[in-house]
Amino acid sequence: MIKKRCILLLFLIVFLVRPAYGESREKIYDDWLHTDESFTAANKTFVIGIDQPADSASVNLNGYGLIIERGVCEDIANLSICLNALNVSYRNFTQHEDVYKAKIAVYSYLADLELTRAIEESELSIGETTKVSIVIKSTGRLIASDIEYSDTFNDFDILDMDGCNIRGKSVVWAGSLPVDREVRCSWKIKAKNKASFSSNASLTYYNGVETITESSDTISVNVQDYSLKILFNLSRDKLEVGETSNISIILRNNHSTENLNNIYFYLDIPDGLEVLEKSRLTKQDQTYTLRDSLDLDEERKLFVMLKAKYPGKYSLESYARFGVGSLTKRVDKTEELEVYLDNLSISFKITNKVLSLFEKTNIKAYVANPNKGTLSDISAFINSNIVGIDIETINIEEIIGKSNYKLIDVDFTAPNISHQYFVFVNASYKSLSGQKFH
Image 1 (cartoon, rainbow, N blue to C red):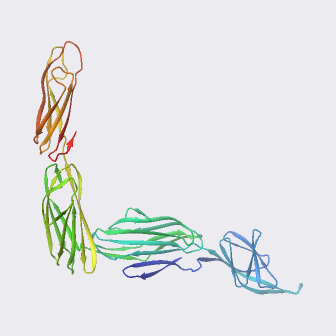
Image 2: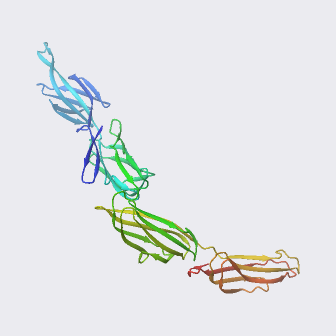
Image 3: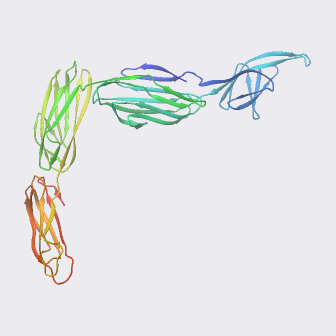
């Protein structure tokens, strides 16, 4: 059995589940016995013997004898056998002696678990994190087996797990714990939505006699809206190489009563993007920063113009550290942007692909730029076994967007023998940003 207590320790809310029995045992037998009588406890049969003078008794199990003094308990086979009293039962007048009886109590030792569960902060804003930690300690006299711990955190992201496992929105741990051993876990929860959240952890285990299921005390977390809200607006979140997108960023004091001070805002720009224009931000390598403060309901508008350099999917990661009263907090914001570049396309136009002897056909080959932007330094390699088509490399300075370049325009007359012919074209090129493609 587990009972609970609550400890409050300087910004740390601790919920504790403790065993009800200090000895972690359960009485399974209690009766009066005479010498040579037997009793059964925990599927084990014992035989009692009472010594003369009557100040102790012997207990025998499979030939193993245990001497127990009056008022004392002794351990055998994970049981505690206690001689609680020795009294005269009756007088044997034939042998002129008193016959004694013994009050025997038997306790089965149990496994017991103590769960300490702590959360650092119970007041959060959206985007903020707090640390949760637990200690599960085996405090009984037997190994605690089939342990299952589960702690669910809806409306939160579970981060930085150490010691336990994450299963969906739950923190779980399963296993066994020997006596005086413990398992420690810690993780962070990140608030996602404005809500009032309550959580109970569930702990089940086998104590040697039965399966115990317990719930911890409730912890409550109140999640408010962002103290500092970061608003992103991308004019376009999918760009062709060479195109631009405007980012409007608003930093807003969303706190109900406090000014925000010592704001440090950071925006990371990936290598595949180029900043053409910016306002209020200071460049440090690939990071753009702002130091500021905001009064109640005040907001700050920022602007960045980006140019797409290389194809890929990019994360525009930003965060802000700021002060609210005496506390330092952090809020994160990430936006996704995709840059694409369609490959050059090669097409053929052949009047007739199957020819009779001496029949004529026209063969044309084109390389086309399907993009809006210009592609440059195009190199087209041509290989063929058709008379009139040279094996060569054609260098093209550029092909503007949505246009093509004619590589081959040849009239061909079939010879007087049956044969198969081929034409092969391969092209490489550069984008406007100088990236080479094959």
